[in-house]
Amino acid sequence: MNAARLRAVPVERVWGRRDIPTGFPRLADDVPVGEIWFEAPAGAGLLVKYLFTAERLSIQVHPDDAAAAARGFPRGKDEAWFVLDAEPGATIGLGLIRNVTREELRAAALDGSIEALLDWRPVARGDVFYSPAGTVHAIGGGIALIEIQQNLDLTYRLYDYGRPRELHIEEAASIAIPGPWVPPSPPRAATPGREILAQGGAFSLERLTAPAGVRGEAVVVPIAAGGFIDGEALEAGSAWSVAESAEIIGDAIDVLVARPA
Image (cartoon, rainbow, N blue to C red; front, side, top):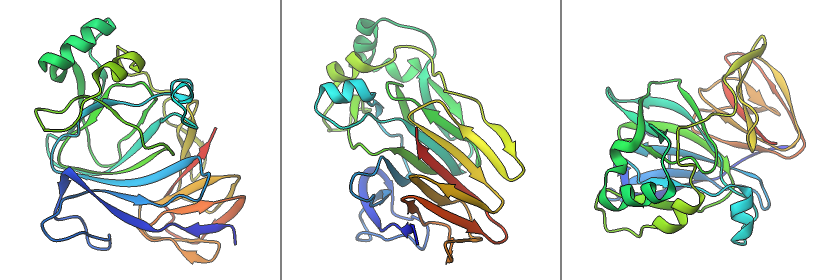
């Protein structure tokens, strides 16, 4: 069997929740859990997380492959988000509303006007966003989502709403794309039961609703319970790593599949 179920690990975040859904591991009752990390195999190119937000995340940016390599890291950090739930009025900030210079970006981060400069978009269940490295972004409060990203834990914060956490304005401004969000490709139907949600970035992202084979390195994340992967039941709230190949079979299949480019 080439599909391996990944271990889930809760992570405390200041913007997290104390009422995360049942079935996920928790910390102490008074500790807000913002992320559930699924431990990736050694050398894996992709990482899976669940995020549960009560407040806005910092306005931040991640390096691309070249910028990460220049700093001694193995890869950059593209991200993709699949929204599972969103409270009325929930938003995600993705890209800027206009092009600015890097000096203007630094100044906006310092005086707080970057909040108004960020392009805040309303979100709803089922929305998908691919955020290429370098995109200035922030996930808003009241959202539960699946995040699939390149396997790198490196974030540069531009602004954090006055929270007492470290900022990285110079590093962020030097690698940020100081303008609007540009996704790599729009979603499109490929074959019956297979939709390509994003392609052209550091990894591809598909949604499968029919039996299929998964070939090559990949992560599989069920959106809802249904079907089997190499004979193991696919459950919501789980994540699976595929090393070479796996077969997804059965009824009521609804999974995300991501592959490094």
